[in-house]
Image (cartoon, rainbow, N blue to C red):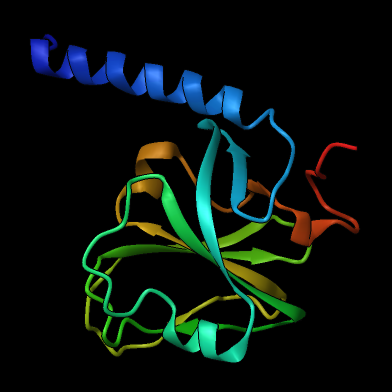
Length: 163
């Protein structure tokens, strides 16, 4: 099978996106951005923080759209097992469960909008969850072992913020 002009253009476009994002990941850490690095390379997302009970409860409910490289980062002070559902969530999402060192432990891909079935973390050591648009985890190679960099992981981070 040969490549089609469309697949070639898509590959070039993705290559440009990854090159741009890799440069962005070299910038200083901020609360409004997470950087992820793994087998697929390095990528950055602009994030909203949900670290209060009301913010975590609402999450991305009722949103009709979200820019491609945006997401929501849920943070807790104490590690625990976490479970999410998609009640009142209109967007399909990838849900990424992260431990206290900023290491991805589990990725639940393509959570179904409106589904009230619990989505468990599969670990008792989760201090953060990143929600991004569905399909990006697979496209970007985000998987268990991927490292997430954010100021919330200051102590003992697998990939610490510079400085």
